[in-house]
Image (cartoon, rainbow, N blue to C red; front, top):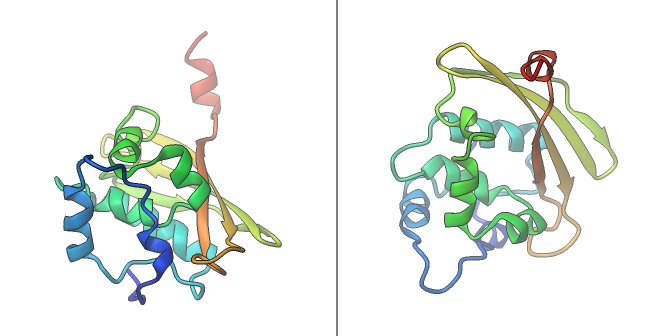
Length: 164
C-alpha cells in the first residue's frame, strides 16, 4: 500500500447517529495513511480498494478502507458504512472479500472519468469480473481525488449460460 496524507474527503462517511461505527474506528487506527489524495491515479485507487478487500479482517478494515475511496455520490447511495459493509458481503460482491488473486485490465481514461475491469479469482478458483467506474472529484473537500462511483459485475459467457 501507499503511504498517504490525511484528507478531509476521507472523513465524509455519511454515518447515521446511533449506528455502529466500531469497524470504522478500528480501521482508522489500523490504516490511517490510506486516504484519498489528489496525487493518486485511478489505477492506485482501484488497487488500494481491491487489496483492502483481499485483506479484509473480522473488524471489516478492508471494507472501511474501500468505503473511504467511494465518491461522495456513491457514499450517499450505499452508505453509511454499516450498510455499505452489508452490500459488500452480499453474493454479488462477496467474491472480492479475501480473494486469491486479482487480474487488472487496462485503465480506460476519458477526461475526468475512468473505468477498469478487474477479474477476481476466489480461493476455489472461480472468477468474477467487475467494472470499476471512477471520477476525478471537482468539489471540495475531495477536489482532484479519483474516487469510485460504482462497481458492477461484468456478465461473462459462463454466467450467461447458467440459466440454460
